[in-house]
Image 1 (cartoon, rainbow, N blue to C red):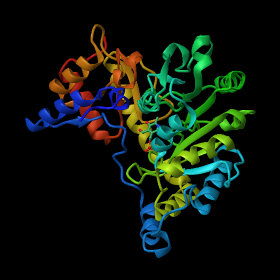
Image 2: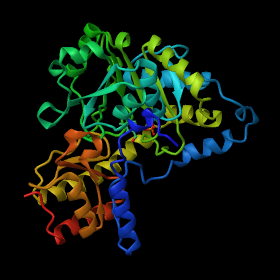
Image 3: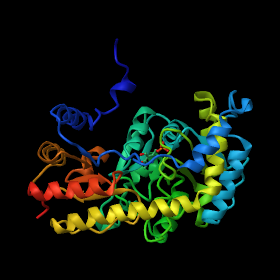
Amino acid sequence: MKQRERIKRIPPYIFAEIDKKKAEAKAKGMDIVDLGIGDPDLPTPDFILDKMAEAIRKPEHHDYPPYQGTQEFRESVATWFQGRFGVTLNPNSEVLSLIGSKEGIAHSFLSFMDPGDIAIVPDPGYPAYAVGALIAGGEPYYVQVNEDNNYEPDLDSIPQEVIDKATLIFLNFPGNPTGSLASDAFYENAIAWAKKHNILICNDLAYSEVYYDGEKPRSILEFPGAMDVAIEFHSLSKTFNMTGWRVGMVVGNEEAVQTLGKIKTNMDSGVFKAIQETAAYALLNGDSFIETQNKLYQERRDIIVNGLRELGWNIEAPKATFYIWLPVPEGKKSQDFTIELLETTGVLVVPGTGYGPNGEGYFRISITAKNDRLEEAIKRFKEHGIRFS
Ligand code: PLP
C-alpha cells in the first residue's frame, strides 16, 4: 500500500524505543517502577461508579446521544463553571461534550486551519498539538517555553510572517510536561495579542483540578475579552481518574465552539449518554474528592521533590499537575539518559524530547505511583549514583 502524504507527515513515535526497552527489562524479570505514563494509578471513585451502575441500566441511554452533548451534561458544565471560575456560559451555544479532551483538541486543527496555515504550539508541550496541525495539512510553529520565562510563550518573539499565517495558538496551564501555571498578566496579554492578530486561543485546561497548596488554576475565560478570542478544553480524565471513560468538554467563544461542533457532527457520534449523566453528577458533587486526592498527590510530589533535591536537583516543586520536569545530568542526552536509567535502576521516566525539540536536556517524572514506589525510585537513584551534580 502506498502511504499517503498525510500519514508520512506524522513523526515517528518517540516513546517507541523506551517502550521496547521497558518490555525487555520486564522480560528479564526486572521490577519496573513506572513513573512514565500520565495516567492516574488510582481507580475512579465509588461515588462515580455507583452513579454509572444506575445510569447504564436506563434504556433511554442506549441509543445515539445528541451530537452536542445532552442538555443535562451541558447545563451541569455551565453550573460547574460558574461555581469554579465565576464565568457564565450559555449551555446551549457555548458548551459541547467531547469524547475526552484529546478528541476535541485533534478536531480543532481540522476546524480552524486550512492546509498551509500555521498553529502556534508550546515547546515542550503535549504532542497532540503539533501532530494535529500536521494531520490537518498545516504547520506547527514551536514557541519555546522554559524556566526563565515561567514556561509562558513569549508572544512578542513570534515573527510577523508566522503571525500572518497563524490561525490558532495552543496554551496549556497547568502544563504538561512542565507542571507550570500562567500568571494573570500572561493571560491578559495573550487575549490582547490574539485580538490584534485575529488568532484563536485554544486553552487546554485538562489539569485544572490537579493543583497544590490550594492555588486553583484559573480559566482564561475569567479574563475580560477572552470570550471573543478563546475556547477552552476541559476533561474529567485526570480530575476523577476517568481516563478510560472518554469524557470532556469544550467551552467558550460561541462561533468557534459551533465550528468545532460542525466538524464533530460529521466525524463522531458523541459520548455514551450513561457516561454523560455520570459525568454531570461528578462535576457537581466532586469537590471533596478533589481536595482529598490533591492532598495525596501533594504528599507524593514532596517525596519525589525532596528526594531529588538530596541528589543535587535544585528544583522547585510544581504548583499543579502530577508531573515533575527536570534537567538530565550534565552532558547527557534525554533519550540516552532515560534508557540508561531504566536499564540500571528499573525506573521508567519519559525523555523530554517526546514533548518537542526544546525538551532536549530534560525528562519528566509522573507521580502516578504509590508513596512506597516513589521512595523506592529515589532509593535506587541513590544506590546507583544517579545525581544531577
Ligand atoms: N491535554 C493534555 C495537556 C494532556 O496531557 C492530555 C492527556 O494526557 C490531554 C489533554 C487529553 O486528555 P483526555 O483526552 O483524556 O481528556
